Length: 255
Image (cartoon, rainbow, N blue to C red):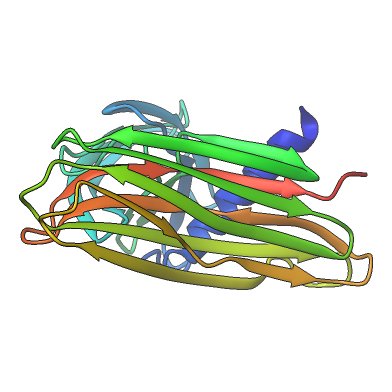
């Protein structure tokens, strides 16, 4: 359990650091951070910097962001004495994926980060499966293998199969955000983000795709690999997201 909590904490820090929209900490007199949840209304435990008041409350507006380019705004209330942050997840955001929220003034900076609701932790070789039924009744399933040895960590290809009704052009997108850790290296390293897009004509009622893979090597020094993948089904004409899979996976080298 201790290792799992440590890996989850590392993942949350990496997710926050990867979001270029988050302002540099320490620019305000009081800095507040919190780990977000996956409900609309949330009462969060707030972590306050040394410059924050001991009593009273503060409020403002949080700017929310979620891949791919989804935005929203909502008010927040901070209770300094109770060290709690009350927020509302805007209707424009989906509940289960990762999201971030940020507000900054000269007096107060608030940052909230939520990892995806689905977490996969394992050691050695792990097969991950998932899928969803889209709003147009398309059915998407996928699988992936991730392996971790002292010499090499491989974040494998996604094998995606989709069945969808004919009549509209469909797009499958596989977005991958991955990084690695090894003894003697500054972790994470090898960070990379890429998105693969596959388009299918209106006459297609099924499709299968295989994404690229990534890996890192070390002479007996590898520790773990981490990924934050997103698989989307979109309507090609409108760009609307019809369904999605999101998860956080960390696979470590067995000890």
